[in-house]
Image (cartoon, rainbow, N blue to C red):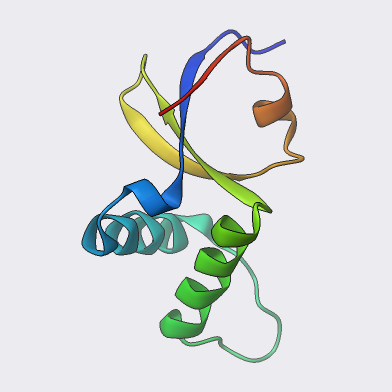
Length: 87
């Protein structure tokens, strides 16, 4: 089990600019393969925003590493959190 202290950050608690920056940074490092056709960044951003709003994905701030990441709610990392707080 993962032993990290994390804070769940509701996406609607962030300014639009901050949320946009977090999503762009996440997309730029995700290395996701979208198949034969390249997907425009605006489309990727809308997809991630939808997932956050629908509760399919969550923003998680790790206090130890002082980093923020986006996870699918079914991700073992999210399910394995021992200390979980929501702001």
